[in-house]
Image (cartoon, rainbow, N blue to C red; front, side):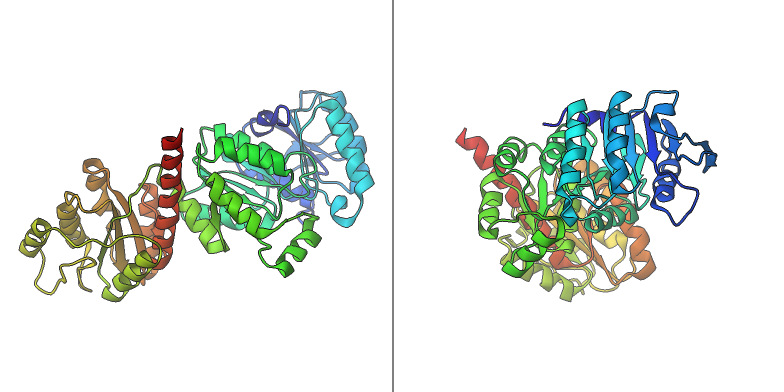
Length: 454
């Protein structure tokens, strides 16, 4: 494992080499995001022209900074990077992020090797080059873009800066948040393996979202996932499943993707949760962030939309979940409290005029039904006060509650975020909810099977 990788995330001072007052420059964006993100450590812009940049005095070089520097973010042209690494080594910097491109990804292997040899000689871990930076929300350190400040349970490790940024932005918009976003870039030094080890021990992280186009070191990767995949869920999105996609991945960042069937078998053997598209990647991260124990296979569906309930049932059966019948006792109690137009079965159709109180009444009955492990609650159309439905239930019951909210317009948007704030995951369609439930449940089943084998 790369030495002192923790110090990068917990840096108490940051220098931005290539900081700029010009809003069109990347050196301006990085410095601005560090400041706007609320970073509480010391901030040192570095620019040979001098002067104040965004309200901070700049320095001609990092060796001129009169305070210890923990982290250096480099945003200058590639030929100047070796000199900066040399300076960083002389002042005992603890970590370096190289945003700059122009290295191995364009065939400039010699410069890449020179930079890495210098950094390793000083024992300094390097993220990048050719990367989108690092954001660690527990330290309010957004040395990256876009500016993400919402602290949450998902650590995003991504070879694609755009994919990592998309997951982070969705998590912020949904008021789930992230613990970190790390863009791997060329991963010439710090790799996905080093980062997985770090986040496996990070108390702020509940699940790891891993987007890679190929494995940097097969033996170390297997050794890593063997140790940590059952510590925290690892959700993997690896494009390049087709031969054409694999060739595209290899030309993108010179990643060697390998045989996808072999990688798929690796995921099953070591209990990685594999996503096959970007929506699924986010869905699985969301559910893994909120659910930290087995859900069970017996699903109850409660809905105000009969059609959506049927979609959920079809998806459940197709994904290995069971849709048991309601117990006689539950049927009897539900008939006493629900209007006559409700369809009392599984799915339980509360019909289109249902409001939050009808859901509360129904779930109060069903939470005691031992037939069910998990509840998929579908809100169709604008239904306010949905978070209130679950507050008391969560105190009384250890059952798992998952929501699909659709057709609700502006009300849906506000209710979705209110539900996320109380740790109820919300999905835009019943099918996506069911697929996520099935995948995460299988993760916990495999985890339990491994325990039994020991």
